[in-house]
Every structure is written in structure tokens, then in C-alpha cells.
Image (cartoon, rainbow, N blue to C red; front, side, top):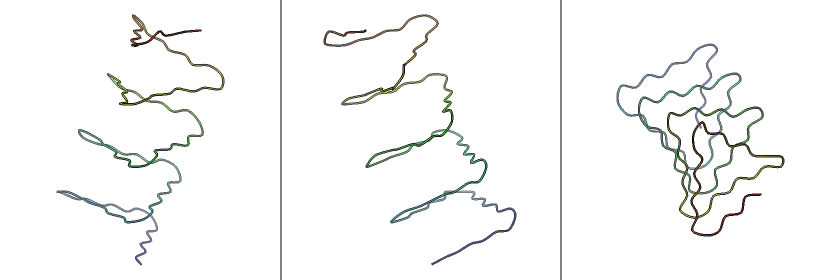
Length: 100
């Protein structure tokens, strides 16, 4: 077992690579704000399910956004879905598409 307790501020600075390996569970709790800054690319690999629970709004900002799936993609809402585009909305399907 290893326990680290810091009363005020803690800083970790690494010049090269930093690797964290955990064989079972990891829990991180932040009281106010968790900020992650990545200089170039950010990648997450999930072998099982990826679940997000958000109480409040989810805001994503991207210059170009792309979502893709090799099998099936679903969007579900209990009330309504709104899609906005300033120029064109393009839908491609190999089968007949019904929009109601």
C-alpha cells in the first residue's frame, strides 16, 4: 500500500514520458475543476463499455468533428433531437431512409 496526503498544493513535473499502470480499479475525485491540457493528440482506448454520467450540460468544441462506427451508431432522446447546419445537411444510406 502507498498513501500520499498533501495539505495544500502538489506538483508533478516530468521532462520525458510518464507511465501509470494499474491492474485493477482507479478512482479520481476532484472537488471543483479537473483540467487536462494535451499539446497534440489525445487518445482513449476502451476494451469494454465507455460510460459517461453528466449532471448538467456537455459542451464540445471542435473545428472539424467526425464520428464513425464500423457497425451501428444510435442516437436516442426522450424528447427531441435538433440538428443545425448553416449550409447543408447530407444523409447517405444504402437503403430507403424514412424521416418522420
